Image (cartoon, rainbow, N blue to C red; front, side, top):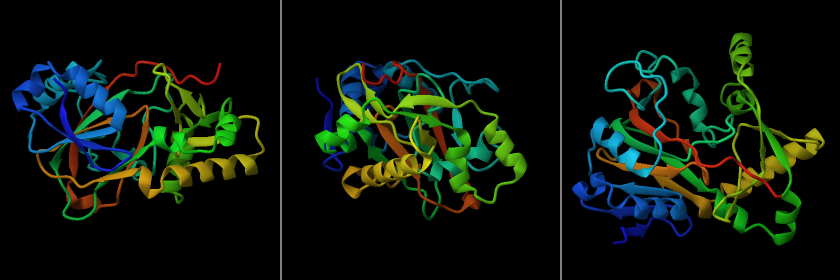
Amino acid sequence: MAVDAIELTPRVGSEFRIDRDALLSGQHAQDIRALLVDRGVIVARGLHLTDDEQRALARTLGDLRLGTVKKEGDEGLMRVTFDKAVNPEYAQFFFGSQLWHMDGTYEEVPPFATLLTPRVLSETGGQTEFVNNYAAYEDLPESEKASLDGLKVVHTMQAALFPGKPDCTVEDFALWHSYPNREHPLVWHHKSGRKSLVLSTSGSHIVGMHPAESHDLLNRLMTHATQPQYVYRHTWQMGDLLVWDNTGTMHRVLPFPEDSGRQLHRFTLNGEEPVQGAG
């Protein structure tokens, strides 16, 4: 049985409709995964999943990333919030989520997908946008695709965060600089045979290219990929479930008041293939 779904935009995003019990049973997991990879982002409304249900659903779709378990019941859970009392380990970095990015560009095998549900929403702002990096690549001229194949990009934490906090302290920058750098192909040749751009604000520079040319090329590709036809903007409602394919999309959150208490609960699936380039 295929999952009943409607497209949210022509190039990215679908809303799927499925009985709650059937969803949690896992019997349609392969159909849901196929829809996710095809559309980049999938949304279901009105589910109001508990943490335990969201975790169980994640496990039907892939290998759950456990992280550091702070207390019982938190296995795999990240609370996405600016409140450092709620998430002392990562809240200091979340301002960077307002810039276009892929998760896990510092890893050889980036996360496959993420499941997100809202717990507290801001009265203004806080929508989440997604870009289809498959479609952005597919629409490039064939000559440009050939010129991009084989290029490699160095991803760094300071490249990801400095644009969001240019008034950072020396201590801030030193912390970001302490994170490892990672080199990835600019064009990901997926095991499925499809190709996508590996774009993110974490992309510092192209290996072996003059810095000015590297800067201009990465900026031009980012501008191309974030054109309206490749973007889905999600306006959150309580009860939503949103899943995105991190290997084929970028995302960002639109600004919202930091004192709003906005909090989303997130479970992430481990990656299933390294970023491979041509050859």
